[in-house]
Image 1 (cartoon, each protein chain N blue to C red):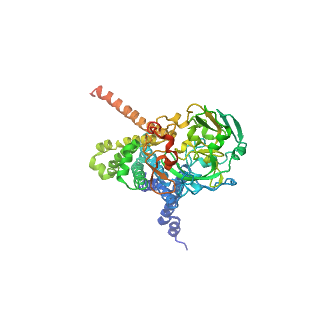
Image 2 (cartoon, rainbow over the protein chains, first blue to last red):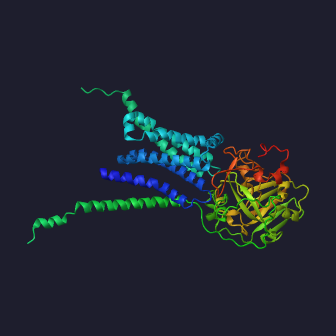
Amino acid sequence: MKDADLRFAKLLVLVNCAVPALLLAWDAWHHQLGANPVNFAILTTGLMALIFLLLTLTVTPLRKITGLNWIIFSRRTLGLYAFFYALLHFLIFFFKDQQGSVSGTLSEMVKRKYLIVGSLALFVMVPLAVTSTNAMIKKLGGKRWRALHRLAYVAAIAGVMHYYMQTKKDVRQPLAFAMVLAILLGWRLMDYWRTKQPAATASAVPAKPKI
Amino acid sequence: MKEPNKISAREITDPAVYFNRRNFIRTGILAASAVATGAVYRQLNHPAAGKIKTARLENVVAAATNDANGFHVAEPATSFENISHYNNFYEFSTDKEGVAAAAANFQTKGWLVSVEGLVRNPKVFDLDDLLKLSAPEERVYRMRCVEGWSMVIPWAGFSLSKLLNVVAPTSDAKFVAFETLLDPKRMPGQRSDVLNWPYVEGLRMDEAMHPLTLLASGIYGNALPPQDGAPIRLVIPWKYGFKGIKSIVKIKLVATPPPTTWNLAAPHEYGFYANVNPQVDHPRWSQATEQRIGESGRRPTLMFNGYAEQVGRLYAGMDLRANF
């Protein structure tokens, strides 16, 4: 793929991921968020964070299955957007629902376990966002960087749990998220075993030296 | 005479034009994709809105301005737009913003309400006859949902006690059981088993006879829209909203505590009483504050939703933590 095409593809992802946030802001500005606008904004940004987390985790399996290596370019953007929406989700909760009260937020967190789980999801995404630059990848080294970025799995699991736990009764949607996540993580587990197995056999039975 | 090289030069597209066309196409793709993403977002995630129109109710008696009986709370009423587009009514949709659209064509013609059980005069009421029992009064009540949001709603209706007095409960009658219509054709939410259908609720006799307990048929002087429980529903302002059973078809006087839908669904989260109580939290969230619809920020939740003066005595000596 040509550099110019890749740059364009990056721009395409960058712009499209911003669309939900822009529409949400537009609707908020025009008082079109319905009867409970703060709740609507919290729910929307939370769903976006989960969707982008799952999309981020889809890139690698899709790349390996299709062989389209170039699509890896989108992973960083998608991941950063997941963090962006999760942060927005928290900030709206903190400033609009809790009126910026630290003590109020903390006392809510003690009473609502799902807030602790959600905070965990957001918390583990911070180092991922910070180390998302090329310079940081170089600094950490590929191996350590990849190990650190497995925290994305923790963020996704905690994020989906957070959604499930706060749902009053109709858990169909959180379960759908959980199912997609299970498939994405399950694929990784299978991929890990598949790539590990032949390597293990190969080292156990050393090839005969050619004479 | 033409110079040959001049002609061939014309045939080569100017690089500036070539790249402009490329940019033009790219801009088009970018714009089209953004519009498509926006359309998907709008399709999947939009708040409810729209005009709801129901018949004007006749002879609605204005609410008494004296607040001692709790009939008229002196707080700004929630807009009709919000009351009719933010509903918990799982018979139509589990999405509060989706109920209005799902219930839009709900037909209530020929509605019957059976009042039966431990009564001297059981009767199946035609809705019009039932509503004629007493002129509708305007009652401006707080409504506190167990989810942590609240409204102030100008209902129209009369005290349930007026109906109960007509059917004359026997001395064995200790509780009142209520039932919503069961008809998955008209109530599409009943096709999923998210709750046990039909929706059932219950009150203790003294709660049912309390003057605040309202059999409501209207909002803002108009008939109830389907999403708010047409054609007739219960309103118990000191209890969480889910006790206010909607679209009632059966009222039965009984001797023992009747089952209630949310209690059956999650017994550790929803009790029979479900009195609004800021000191007793839901197992998963705090009940100390509420989001009043139309306000910014949360306000403290009041004991018995602000009706302690009127109903506190009903629960004197009871452990409200155990009887949540």
